Image 1 (tube, rainbow, N blue to C red):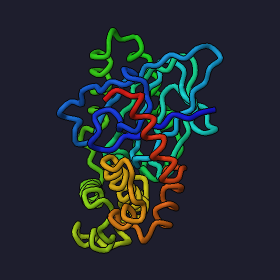
Image 2 (cartoon, helix red, strand yellow; image 1 turned 90 degrees about the vertical axis):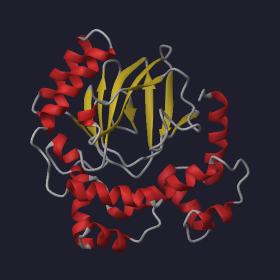
Image 3 (cartoon, one colour; image 1 turned 135 degrees about the vertical axis):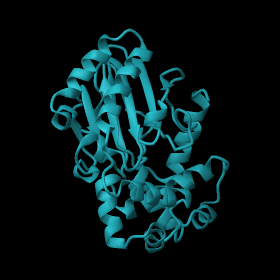
Image 4 (cartoon, rainbow, N blue to C red; image 1 turned 180 degrees about the vertical axis):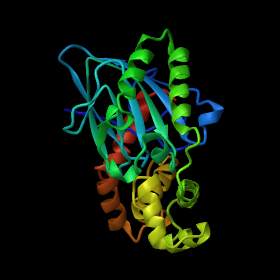
Length: 289
């Protein structure tokens, strides 16, 4: 069965040009001013599939923690059945999502540092798994989903969501979250090229403390976040190179050599660089904007 590709980098409005998501499937919803420090974006997804038909989509990792509210049929991630309302932990590996019937939901992508405040436990405790939100919110997740499903229109749904998230954030600023956010942003801005010891020194902590802060507030190790940042920088660079010289791409992207680049592509994207480029070209020819 053929796979679609989905990629979204921080500066992409909905998804990257490599994605083969049908036009109109995704829509960005506004993030209120009070939440912008904790939520990077909110996406609305609607897609209908023919009865008995299943679509597989390879989602490349961005390292973010997400809250997902499914009003329709919850997609299956790898071999795990989807849940109506769930918290999905940060991951540095690709996930193959299987979709069928009526996909209809809202996805909330959290910024580094926000998960502990909103979920009530260290982000690293979730790992790359998905938990029913009721396990963390003591039944409030299902109630919020029900109210959102009954609301008339997305504006009303987003108002309910904003109120619920703001209530959980009131007076809650876990120790170290600002440092973790600062460090994560610094690593991302450098496309993973800055040494972790230098990042730790720049934010005023030791490397061991940086590890602890990333577990609590990011959900990945600093090393995994750095690898993702380097890969994301490479993916951005590839957008301007329809016929790249891979050895040069590797060196320009901060990889040791071409073999290192290939190994990182396989580990973080699940495909080789040439396979990715072939899918990206195919996806961009089918997808609007």
